[in-house]
Length: 202
Length: 345
Image 1 (cartoon, one colour):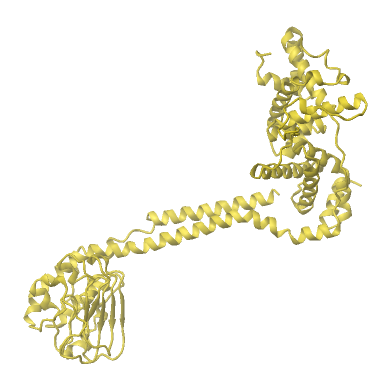
Image 2 (tube, rainbow over the protein chains, first blue to last red):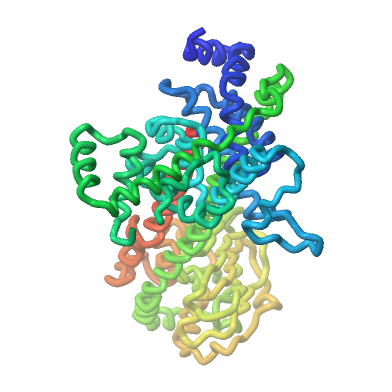
């Protein structure tokens, strides 16, 4: 069924229509929340909150990309959660060593799992990326997650972030630059599957 | 890479995403062929982009579909976010109201203070009539401020001359009795907010000066005093609560001016309220007209040129009004912002 038709039925109170939209976008919503918050449990709460907010705010959907509109709900919910964390900081996301002191990067990426080497490399790569994402400002992180980790186009991100297209382009470029610099610190740890050595400057 | 600017990196980033126009793409590719540093920078950025896009995408660990209970609960609680959203604007509106009320209280004092300008003129008027008053040869009263009572109950109410802020009441059957009293609220004469009462059952004259006055003027600007005009015949003496205040230094002629006249003059023509033409002149006209009734047909009262209260009252758009309007506009602005934020979800 057409997406806009589902939205129309959902506005009229058809919960099943809305839930079909939820099923279509919940992976993307959870991925965005998890990358933004770096916490799967908090990401679940935020995702649920975002869909509840979307259901409540269906009247404010003016057409266009429903995906971008839902991602706006998720992004706003992530901002709220991050602001709440700033007001009431809890435990660090960084792992603790035996003395309960934070382990500095990149050694915290060490994973003692006994999986295959490739899986370990992927895990390390993912940890490195998440670590570098966590170091970005909130809006820079949101832009690069939506474009590079979710595959959204600039126009959708512009809607989702309520920012002009030029701002999205600029912030994406800056975010990529920062990530490039950050990932240079993990270069030796990056898995061979990425095959970056040939592109790396001497 | 240090020679590259952020604008050039933005160009590279958009190029990698295919966001450049064909003309921009052609121009950039030409420059890339001619510039090794640009090619290296682009390769680095491309590798970073490739790395990010290779990151795994998390799948939702569970379904986030809404149950009917959640939807109903969501509908029931839909007022709560609105309440939270409007909380700020509500607080601002409350503060604005308090500020407006506060300013209104201060503004209420402005006319009272403004009436002070009429005080010297009142004194001048009474001074002009002092000789006439003395010829009436009324008994001197012990209370120099206001207390005048006697068979000739027609006395001018000095406190009534205090002007703005006073409360004037009258009632009962006028029978020629008058009690005058002044309960001073204290302070300087220019703080007068007297209460002037016309009664029929009151006895005695009360003159309790506010004290702290600075001289002659207090006789006319009985600060905070209560002046009662009674109708019944009083005792020969003044009320027991008459007080002689430091203002006794007032000249004798002014003391005499507070004397009473024949009682029969008091009720019909002596009702000082009849001479009041407007609220602004209430405190000033009463004394003069009553006083004139003591001896002769009431002459036309010529107010002093500078005693017009209206000339000292501020215009509508004074500073206080502007502040109130600004606060009101601020409240409306915050409310509109709250509504917009609410609609944006």
